[in-house]
Length: 469
Image: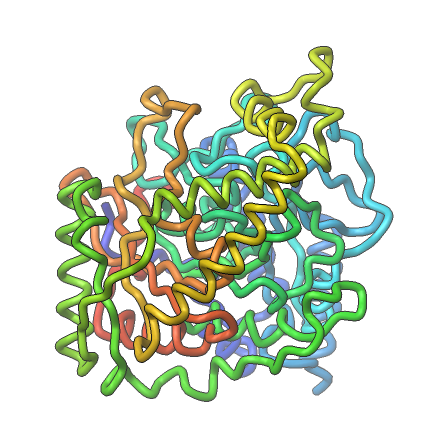
């Protein structure tokens, strides 16, 4: 583990890059070239990208540089590169969804979130790997490749999924930020295991138009960055009503930057219920407990919370909805034995064939009931604090594909909450640990406020993986 950042511009966080560009100390051209050089050097070992848009990125950087020098900057993100998970469609570009079946599938539309990023002046530098159809938390992909977790140079470990490539690309300083999607933990798990910041937004906060779906009831896009401040900056650009996605209509936009530095004094934060602690790896639990005490020292009130259901039970209900909707979308592909579908993913999709319409509708009805029960249980609490995962990243050789690592994350999607993953330590082997900050739906601003206070008092998020050197 290295404790110092490299002098590379790509190693800077987004908010620092924005200052450097605004002060004319850094050119978008030099920044993009640095990212492309790092990708060329490290990508063969890491395997984060499905495709790199080198030529297009260079042209966009030249245009951004000229616009900024002529006084026509469109905003603080102008000229900053970003990577997109390969579920996000760009018209005319291949969007595989992590599937070899769709290796040549050319998108006929551009996702709303991609349009917003480009309108803010950002430069899409490429597409990152995902678990096939985004259905898996370990981060593996049998046919298109599994990205390498950059924190262990000796052994291949789980990068976390399904936004595996985005997590690795940001952690290894290939790109300053990326977009992931989260249906049951797919932003937070790779953020946690790769030692970066990941924001799981509330369903409807960011448009999913043009994002290949897994479970439309539960899918949420979100930023993956190296700091909470960067996640807040990106949220401001990404959020907002989109007529092409009805779920985004009727919600007031968050103001994450307005209250970001208010601190945590006076906030009531609930610790992990005692019943949920027993399965957590000792080193993960120790890092978690230190984080809770750090937030107490910063002025937060730490309280106990009794929840009406166990996280595993909610995760199982979430999995039922996920499987049913995934089967409705891609069941014809999973049912065809002649198509090259990941052997770990195929049974997850086909499990949806056994879920009747009655059981599916009952699961949705139970979800509504449980949302009300948990809202009552969380009354007067500003956030719930948990680890992101039960264990650190494990060796790929040890993965049991019949299980999920999303025990502590799925329930957040199921109850339509928002969640933030922030680095909070390292194991004895030098593997990242991560804190999850869970807030009510559409209260991303509070999650980011808590995360910023924690990061302002610690430096875990500034550590650099060995394979990023």
